[in-house]
Amino acid sequence: MGQLGLAMRPDHSGILLRVQDGPAIVFQPTGGLEALLAMPAMELLGSLVSSDIATYISMPGKPGHTNVMLHLNPALAAPVQARDLVGVAKAIVSALEFGSRTPTDPL
Image (cartoon, rainbow, N blue to C red):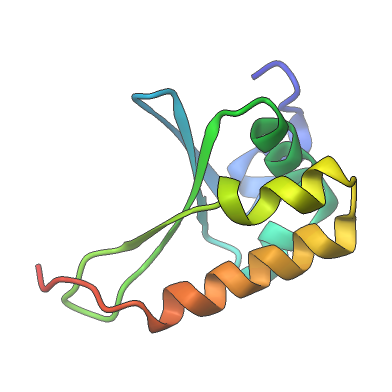
């Protein structure tokens, strides 16, 4: 992950990055939607998706429930391949809207 610079530090980006088995990368926003739509985050998302690395967003569930894990690769593949930043942003917003409606299990 040599492309990570200061801009993707959690205190700068509002995003925690976790590496999981697979390999997979999980984006856990702490700075809201704006953090995921910032250029450094979208560039990293695009780089991971174009490299076929499984990429997820972890969203909190409602209080007392588990989180929602959104697999982004299927939604981002076409706009990333087309180098369409507006399409990438729309796909991220759509994924987050879907995640906010997704039922989660109680803890």
